Image 1 (cartoon, rainbow, N blue to C red):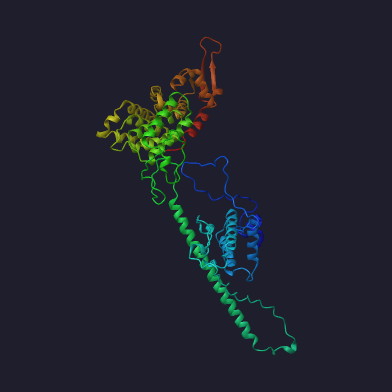
Image 2 (spheres, rainbow, N blue to C red):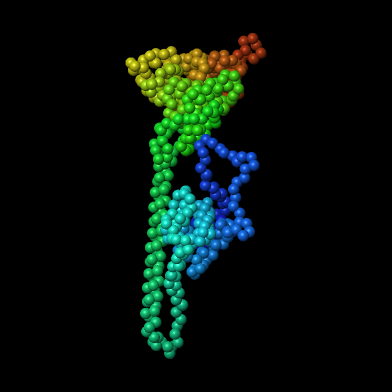
Length: 537
């Protein structure tokens, strides 16, 4: 193994040493600095970062990267005693463990950089002989993102000025010369003391090899145990904070069920995903949240803000409510308003998050179930969009109970259940008639899958008739006018199958030749039955 090319940055040589694909340049990401929650602190105007420089006459407190590279190269190539033997064995052991763990090219670059920094630190601080190199580890090998430190810095170091002597050199390896044939007259006259020397040399070599193998085995086991434990802990602590409704079970990271009392007075605040323990100074209390809600709704009413801005502000409101575990009528109002706005802007993902949280809030005894019927209606229509009639039946059975019978008999819920029944039995005529009577966010939700139902009805008609008048088709599908109907057929690529009868006469009319386009309609309907949306409940 050419260690020099590895240290000097030869990426192709590095790939051959560790059995990796060569020819790829990867960037090494720096360790992310801990940032304050929800806050960025830029450098003020005129402020400069502190830097250390070695001026003339100053004591050198650091080494350049070039000096570290040359020092590491000398240590590896030097098998004598000019450097601590434990340090050289530590470096070679790190490379051996990296090869054993099949490090990729990026990990190998990080390994070399950490070795250079650690060795350079030891020589700058005059601790190359003080440090216990047989107990030294590297963060990249232990998967430990703590600070790169020497072992002697973690334990009680020896007194200043008392520098221990370097350990005695190990016995040199037995390099026996090749056996040359003796002259004929010397055969049988070799002195007997030669044999004990050969036995002693081979015995010492075996002892050294066994000790070295045992020492490296223990080092590898120590690294492997630490790596496995750290990996296990990391997997246990991993958590997805993208969902605002998630409840943390990792109390050692931070507990989402522990309320925080906010002190922030800012009305408008950008939403940032929570990845660390929340700071009270960056969380708005309830009175400020109510003022922020009024400001957002005033901008929405006056059409002074886009939906992307409104969605971001509502997510920030929901986050502050969730952090402080505020569960009251105002919380219900925030989630319901955001759900309606999401439906009006065809944002099914945010609607699903609000609908899921609303289902939990409706179950709380201290909250009045206002607008429950409206959101039960949305839930039924959502299940129709997903072609999930089993969930519709479960919801129906839930509200058929005596305590929920008033919700079941509400006109809005009955209307949604009638639409579900008409789709279940294939009665497209009743479905489109009920669709014409919907309005508001309910109609926005049905509009997400209305063309699929029109295609389903057209599939049924094409299998029953060879030709169908457009004057019947467009009103039946609630397409509004002829221009909208022709646009719908054009999206399906069926405009070439329109036949005009009695062209130029008073009784001119148009037909759709369903016989010739039947196969195309069937194919498109089978493709439209697959539903895949973001943020399913």
